[in-house]
Length: 65
Image 1: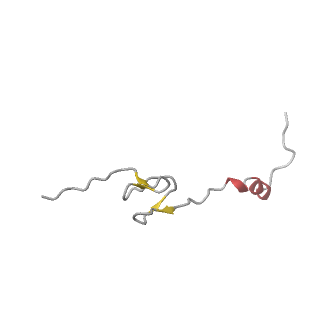
Image 2: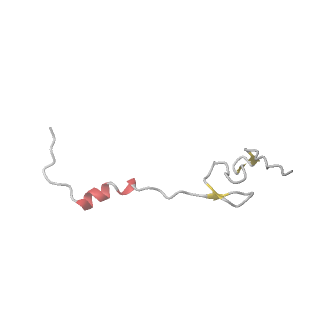
Image 3: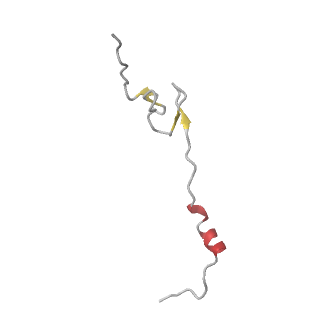
């Protein structure tokens, strides 16, 4: 069974794991309301879908009597 002869240093270990870091989230902005939205996701503020260019969720406004 293979066993390492020497301990792996923190620098070498860090070099090996350098690509495992978290990526920054990319935000786009809603065309309709300007709210920050993740790409390919429906805007939670107005229900608009940027990539499809249409209203995906119809938000009903409360009627005042």
